[in-house]
Image (cartoon, rainbow, N blue to C red; front, side, top):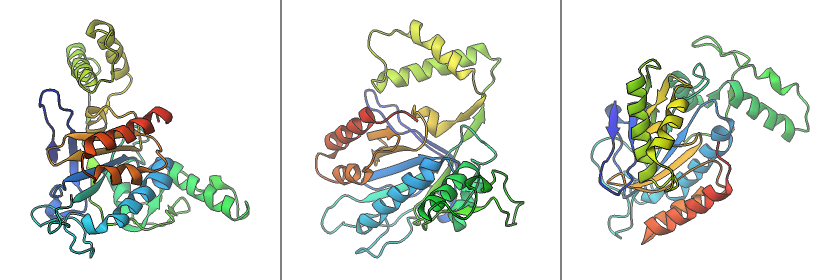
Length: 297
């Protein structure tokens, strides 16, 4: 398990808590760049599979020469540990991109095993499979059968199965981790109140709560929300993300430069701005604009 977080007063830091890295050297966390982009997604999330991952592929390809571990645009899969970054000779900021696969629903599909399948050959099941099949049927004029034939039941381990559908693209070799999951004790009133208080403090630090709302007003509401689920997805929760897909841009010290949830039409533009001088302000402004016009997921 890897964990990264920060508590600097007045500085919002990315809370990265994962159970394992699935494709890095020796399972270690990847080396960070000057600028880092994390996509938090679920395998059984059609928007993540059909929109967010292709955007991430595009960012990977566009900035390949700046990726940590690349050399002159040759591009190599970022690995844990040392290694230099691209652009050292020109003092251009280096970039790292990563995927955090999480689960806050549909746990039989949003699993580490299905994340590995997606990485291995693009296999998806359930709602993501249905969405891809519907997209293919629409593109072909609606022929070829019912989209519901992408059955939500998974094939047996190691088997084929009619429910398997493959994403219509290849994933780039960016680092992929699975979120840390745990269970909360719904009967522990004091524990729930403490967790709610911690979340309230984060929301205040992130300026996500109007100043006229007090802890006495908000914490009971947060407790009620926590009581709705015993499952905890740590990276998702500790960064107060509203769902998937969610995007976070952060620096080497895990300081958050920008974050948003939903389907921003052009995340490539936001990351391009983040790679420029005075990036914190421009990236945050772009992400703020994206959030203001996108519904929460």
